[in-house]
Length: 150
Image (tube, rainbow, N blue to C red; front, side, top):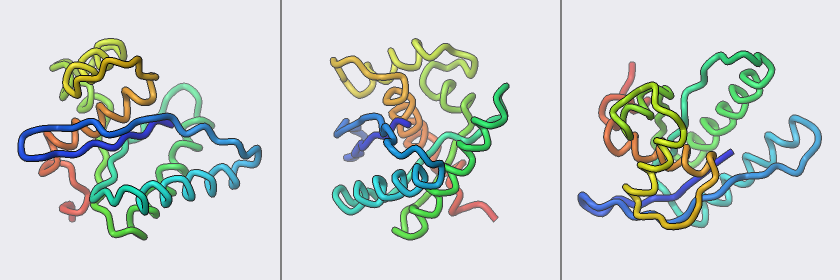
């Protein structure tokens, strides 16, 4: 699972950090605890004001979709516990925000993420996705912020 930290200063976006959370636990619920602990530590260390994730979609593998749904629940719980704003975006909105096309390829999204945030290093697909989601929130936060939905 990818994560990133960015900062908006006026109209400028600054890349701070990104990475991939590799879970070591073998048991499913321990993986959820490990994820929760990781994000609580990140929030305590960096004091973000918002958590943003990609909305789920039902792919071909129902079990993977189910696990991702549970993980999203953990992240929502963490954001509530830490009083963060929370939002989620559908994959098509994310792709369209970066490339202008909701059906674009991951390579196109990655290219745009690196250009927008002026990143020279190689990014994993998960890091690139995290940055794309963060950028999408900057552009669309008034439309998709869950805190504003009834």
